[in-house]
Image (tube, rainbow, N blue to C red):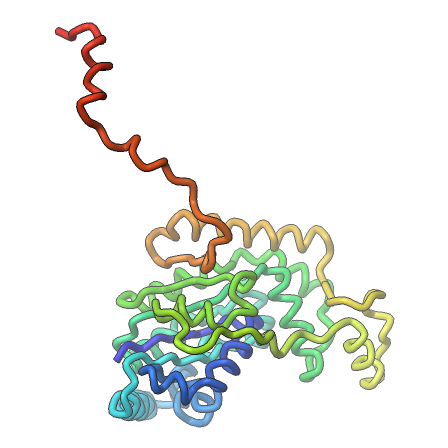
Length: 311
């Protein structure tokens, strides 16, 4: 049975993908695809594995629990098992405290990889950094998060850690597994295309036409209402009705440049550590030579006879 870990990141339409997989789990099982989502992984299955285990015995129990469940999935006929939970990478709150992207992702995924071994493929979705941080900040506010300080936003924009460093940590944690990177901007609203990239097989069911973009970040009007209900000044937020962008133009520019560097590195081969997939459905066919000119025959010899002989 091939095990595929879909580890996130947060705010990259992971909830949308998980909702789609859960909705079609029975039909997918008939085609040999198993699925474990947060409804299973966060109910004790991964306890004491990714987070620091309290003792070696707890770590062994956690790994044994995963192996028992893997054996059960194989007995039920799963040929491919997709495990999807963005918290495997860590949490947004921990990223905010560190002012950096997933500071301990390497050790977390190394522990998970050992428990699920062998892992065929690890899938990570990335997103433009200024949008990723802004989405997390807005998402956490209804969950007790506060407005970020200017010092925090400046520190985030100056952080040297980007997706490239996260991917390098994953490569060290999973040396035997293929690491596949997909941009949120391409696959966010299309869980069926993401499934195809994960498994290397086409979505076996009817095409997904619904908009599966779930769990969207709160808009500015919603955040202003939230602040007012908490007794805070809604005027701390800018005017407007769209999405909140807390960064200044200079800060956003730094983050965009870092993301552009990440994409350039990935498109150049990522030093052999990962593979980037961006074009699941090409809009047009590639330019190719007309059939024929790449073949040579007797009529091509006439030109060669006109050339002066070489000595």
